[in-house]
Image (cartoon, rainbow over all chains, first blue to last red; front, side, top):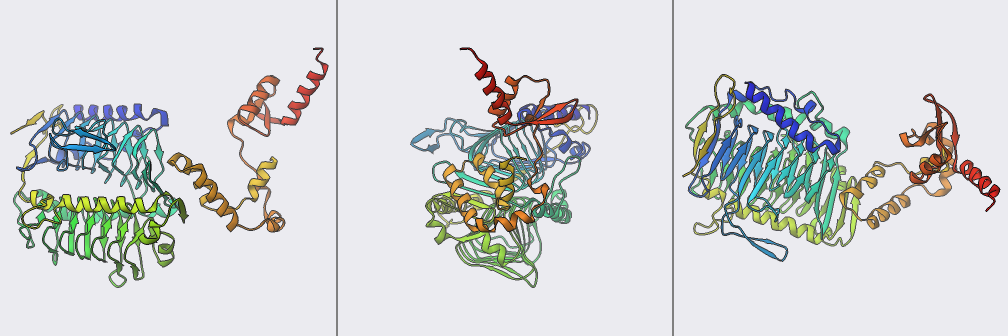
Amino acid sequence: MKALKELFDRIVRCVNINLRELDYDVHPFVKNIVPLDQLVKFYGFYGITPHHPLDFQFLHSNLAGSYFLGKCRTTNSILYKSDIRGDELKKKGDVFQYQDFQILISRDEEIRIEDSFLIKTLVHNCSHDPETLEKFFISNTLSAHYANIHGSPTDGSFLGPFATVDLTTMNDCVIGAFSYVQAAEINHLQIEPGTVWVRNLDNFNFWYQYPLDKLSHYIHFTAGKPPQGLFMDFVEKHKKAFERVFETVNIDPSVTVPRNASLDRYAVIKPKTLISDNVLVAQRAFLQNAWLGVGANAQENCYIINSRLEGFNVTAHGAKIIETDLGQNIFVGFNSFLRGRPKSRLSIGKECIIMPHTIIDIKKPLTIPPAHLVWGLVTCPADLEINSISLKELTKIKQGFSRGGMFFEGNGASFVAAFRERIHHILEANGAFYNGNKDKGHAQKNQNISFNLIQPYPEGELEGLFPTIIIRP
Amino acid sequence: MSHLHALSALEPKQDKANSFQELDQFGFSSNLIRQLRKQRRQRAAPLEDLCKKAAELKVGDFMHISAEDEFIDHEATLDMAIDQLVQEKLLSLMVTKDDNTIGILRPADVFAAVYHTMAECSI
């Protein structure tokens, strides 16, 4: 295991050298966070479909329990139980619109991961950086459990557990636990845990800071210890259910899946789940007594338990929905945690936008009226009053306002329009609008995926490293 | 403790107070931050209540922990003291000897020294 140990040390050095300006040392945080012997236990796997380019290169890396789809390359990296989902990468001949520029994509885009250590991290979408449209790079970066790197070329950075960087090029930054950043480009920033920041340079700026004493109940991360809190307890509690789907080679779906829907074979489906047309259920999703209406989706690391989604619902990566009823066209952002109770259900009206990284955790019934924006920590009606606004009211905002720990500046109508446009795009990409002839998306294209397993050296100096593998048609 | 520290202690204390300082690095305009400060001031207790509020405060509420650049060695030159006061925009410097604080140097003290030097100047 000598080579694997050396690789780990090398990655830590690469990250630290980039973060020296912030005087941030990642080593105490990641030392022993994943014991090296864990990295030998699990196979990596990649998907083959006729809809995605087949082009994988794995060089001097460990890929334990990680999944790859689309054009990917890893070099000198450790990817532990991560999902590298390249089904939204740009293709040769596509035209990328950026401001007044129309840029022709000259070759298929690839996800290129170098000198990085990703732990249970999701990598998805495509590069939105006009300067690197064909290369979605992740280099000199370390990400902790359940982080999301979504459409965000990243260099020299550290993402804490449950952190998300979305549509943002990031250089030499530290993103605290459970922070969400969507800001086009950031450099040399240290973002505190529990920050939710959405900035469009010309139009709006949204910022919310969780009260850290309350956030720590859900997630906290200190040097020398693994991430702790209710979020970790929750996923650990359901971990056992995933073992069966990963240990079994051929597995039949336990529910009826309509012809136009997609249920990934690495998702966990418990009884009384219903899947309607054009539904997409991604790998590592967990459904139990979940009613998914037409065009609803459950992305990676989503949990939908004892809940009903009426249709055209986006449940973004890592979101958890428990004892909750959702009307149609509701967006539940990344890593949100919505928890009602069996006798105190949470009800969310149609067309609501639940901001990424929102926690709604109630002990008495709560109803969120239709078409509201909700953010931050909500445990009771008084919290909801402070941490929400009707979309109608928000569209009237021309300059700015603040409410509780949230600050907004800019044009509210642009903010609402941007979210609605993005929700529509996600539904479209997922195939929620497929009518049997047109608008195919992931729900239709990801139906038949061949999965192939790859394994590391079982012993010796190279134990844990995967051999160099190049896979092409 | 300076006048500024005393006034600062009388400012309304809210969770948001610190957030205002952070907003700048997240790209919020100074105009918005000014407006938010104004709103917060308007929601807080009016000036008439200052007397009651000040009486309730403890010495510790007015104190602050001096930063590294607020200390100067007793053997430093007057030039150094002026530079430190001006560059860091400080209202006082703690004068130290062998890691012990032995006095305080105020801008008024420095100005007095400068004034007397200028008065004695033959130009």
